[in-house]
Length: 230
Image 1 (cartoon, rainbow, N blue to C red):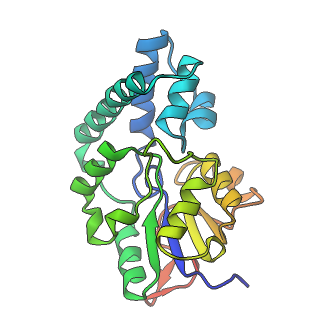
Image 2 (tube, helix red, strand yellow; image 1 turned 90 degrees about the horizontal axis):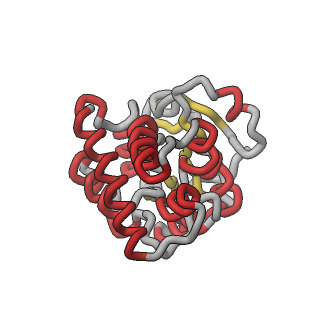
Image 3 (cartoon, rainbow, N blue to C red; image 1 turned 90 degrees about the vertical axis):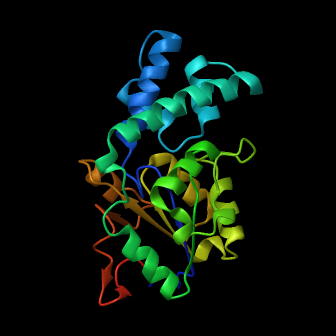
């Protein structure tokens, strides 16, 4: 029997918005420009997905990067990413069932927020394109501000839980990456659900820290009840 869930924390990229291909495209283009070879699929999985730009860039360059250069590199990569999103406008949308879940959570006074490795420029882009502030208190969204340690460290989820005033053990996290699972586990999150529309379901289903693997958010609501998620 799971402890009563009082708060829900969503990762964004690859969880609420299926955009892993857009980020990979941007990082491959950036990496090819600065180190003459693209990031490999293995590097994407281990060093990119779920991690902060600072962490990724220090891996790409294999050294620490000054604040000035860090900002310059981030702006370039994220500009590539947003261009890719805009080019594929028809897929610039929430994962199926997400808005219905948001409405359910709000209607049942279950607190929720987002904890994302995205930085503020992208977060503002998402707010404009998705209307995040229809459902979320923008001040409670945790993002890569350059001060909060990124996943797999627990800091983002601990901060998110604190902002919505719910104990981590009473929170449910929706994630899509290995680093996100580790971060949630390290934060003492009560329940971890993985969004995975790809062919990696078996990997996540056998993960000792994952409670459930789903393709989208449509399976959890039935007769206006969260029969599977909480």
